[in-house]
Amino acid sequence: MSGENLSEGISVRGVSKSFGSIIALDNVNLEVTKGTVTALLGPNGAGKTTLIRILTTLLFPDSGTAIVSGYDAVRDARRLRSIIGLAGQNAAVDENLTGRENLELVGRLYHISKSEAKARSNRLLSKFELTEFADRRVKTYSGGMRRRLDLAASLVGNPKILFLDEPTAGLDPRSRMALWSVIKELVKEGVTMLLTTQYLEEADHLADRMVILNRGKVIAEGTSDELKSRVGGSVLELRLGEPRELEQAVKAISGLTNGGIQSNSESGIITIPVVDGTSILVSAIRRLDEAGVKVSGIELRKPTLDEAFLSITGEGGGRAGLKEVV
Image (tube, rainbow, N blue to C red):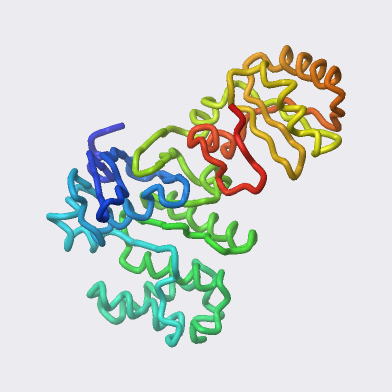
C-alpha cells in the first residue's frame, strides 16, 4: 500500500462520536486505498452512517482525525466537499423537477458553467440509461430510476471519492444488478468508494476489502476470503427431515465442535463450521442416527460471507428463526 494511494484515499484514525449517552463510534481506525471499493458492514445501529456523515463533513467527530484524499474532514471541509460525492440512504432529488433539471441544478451548485453542467448531465443520463426519461418529472420515476438518478447526481462534480450509503436499499434484483454494473465501471475509471450495505452478497460482489463495525467498534476487516476463513475451513450443512426435531438434533451433535453451531427453526437446517469436514460428517450422521433424527440432505461446502458475518458479530443478522448455539 503506497503512500500516494493512502494520501489519495481515506484514512481514519481514532475517530469517536457520541450522541448524549449513546456511543456511535468508539476509536475507529480505517484505511481505504485509492481506486478500490471498501464495504462497511455491521448490524443496524453499528455506526456505519455516522462514520459516512463524518467523512462527508456532515458531522464533526468528538475526537480523532478523518483524512479524505489528503483533506481533513474538519479543517478542510469546504475544499473536501468539492472532490467527493455522496449518495445517501434516501434519494436526494427534487421530485418536482425533471431528471435533467436535477442534474443541471447540482452542476450549478458545484459552480460549473451552464454549458458544462448540461454536457455532464447528458453524459450521466446516458450512462444510467435515463435519457428516455430525462424530461419527465422525478415524481413519475420508479424507485430504481430514482436511485440511479441520485447516484448520477453524486457524480456531476466528477468526484475522486464516492460515498454510497445503502445504495441499493429497496431495489428489486434487476435494478440492484444494474447499479452494480455502474459501480464497477466507475471503479475501473479510478473512483475510490466506501459503501455501506446490508446485502452481504453485494459486498461480496463489489468490495475489495470489508470492515465490520459493531456497537461503534471495528471488530474485523479483510478481504471476503479472509473473513470467511475465520468461520473455519468448511461448513457442514445438515437438512433435517422434520424441522421439529431441531432441538434434539443440536443436542446430539453439540459435542462435535467448540461452538458456532447455527440452526434455523423454519427450514430445519443446521450449519457447523469445521476443519476436518469428512471426519465430523461421519460422526454427525452416526450421532443423529442414534438419536433417531432423520436427515434429508447433507452438504460440505465453503462458508458464505453471511456465515462469516454472523460468526464475527455474534448476532442473528435479522434472519427469522436463526440462532447461534454455544
